[in-house]
Image 1 (cartoon, rainbow, N blue to C red):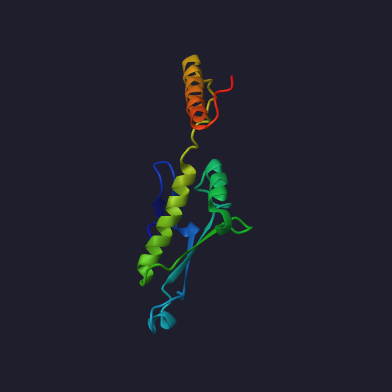
Image 2 (image 1 turned 90 degrees about the horizontal axis):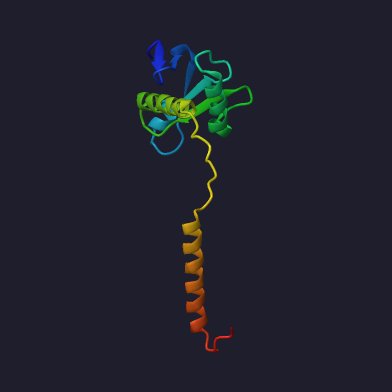
Length: 144
């Protein structure tokens, strides 16, 4: 891994902050699955990371959900691929995706607006028309 991993223009994390452990993958794979540790468990300490701004740290905690331990460590497990190298790249890319999502600013809050007079009138006219159609469908004479 490179000494510093760029995430966004303003954020980069040290490679030392990412801890990878290799475990045996579950599922099909023949004899190879019992011999080779191809799955990767990636751990990133969100709470103690000096590379992340405070607001990104808070949003990451919300985004990560159950993948975040009680101590504030993000745990990602990658075992989609048959090779260790591809699983390492997959786990790292998923970590960077979570950090990027946390780094994007939230959308501005919606400002409540009032409907225009014209839209109110059009809505009521449509309701009157629909009501008239339904009255014509009934077999009884118009009762007004």
